[in-house]
Structures are given as structure tokens and as C-alpha cells.
Image (cartoon, rainbow, N blue to C red; front, side, top):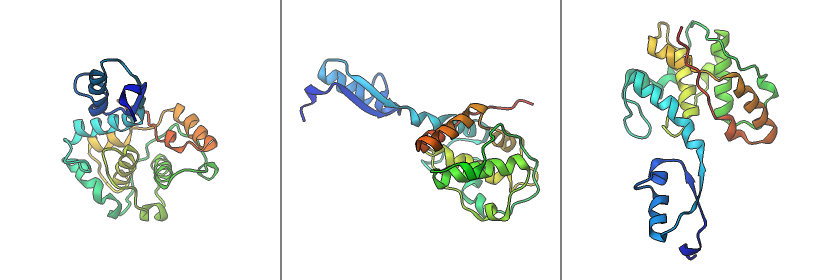
Length: 198
């Protein structure tokens, strides 16, 4: 394959790939002495809002799979904690879990735990499930673990409450429905966070 024939380069949106000074695509363009069409997958951006919120409220990251603060550190073992009485947090998502098809286990778990938090009651069965592992590149499982920690904390800190009140906006309901119909389940993982300032 001759690089001089390249017309389009695709990658995810990490700075290492798309940075305007030292990003891989920029460096390739400099080497070729011409501009290329960039085809950038923006799903990488999904992880950033929640990760930055956790870093701001709880402390920085500690490697690719850990946070340094007390909340972030507790995410790794949250599934081993007993479910307690907790204050419900309302949600705008109105989807019947049984009607959704083709979701990954992680997507279904998040939907179930969102409903549990909204109802103020977590079933014994859901309490025994283990959410996906913590990884900074997987905001879906991190959000699930934040909610799982919330339902296991009798007196949550203000920071945990803020993290737990990040919720899907109404438009995510349409995305969930579209994802289920189109079998494009990764799109369902796009989370819009609405920060409550009550």
C-alpha cells in the first residue's frame, strides 16, 4: 500500500491521533505534504464528561482503570457491598426494559440500575449482578458502578450524590429506542449528562 495514495485516514478522536501539532494524522499530512480527509469516530468523547466530573469531584486517575479518590477507589468493589435503603433519584428515561432487544449486558445493567435508583428500590437479583469493570474508556460501566455504589451507601457524600444524579436527558430515550430498532447498540451508550444544581 502506497501512502501517497491515501485520501482519507480514520481513527478515534484521542489527542494522540488528532492533535494539531503532534497527532498521528497531522504528522502523516506533514510527511505527505498535503491535507487528508479525516474520518474521526467520536465515541471516544462519550467517556470524557463523566471521567472529568469524577476527577473534579473526587480526585485524579490512577492508571487506565482506576481513580485515586475515595469514590473512585470504591468503584472496584461496589458490587460486593450490600444494597441499603437509599433516596430515589428521578429520571426522564421511560423505556420498558422488557421491550428493548439487542443490548449488551453492560447496557442492560445500566438501564436496570437507572430504574432501580429512580424507583428507590434495588431488587436482590440486581444487587447480586456485577457491573462491567472500571476502565476510563468505558463510561457505561463507570456510570453503572457509580449508581451501584450509590444504592449501597446509607449516607452518600454530596459528591457521590452529584455523580449519581448525572442522568440521561429525554433525548436519550429516543436513542435507546433507535438503538434497539437499528441494532446499533453502541449508539445507546452515548450519555448526555444533566447536572442537577438543586
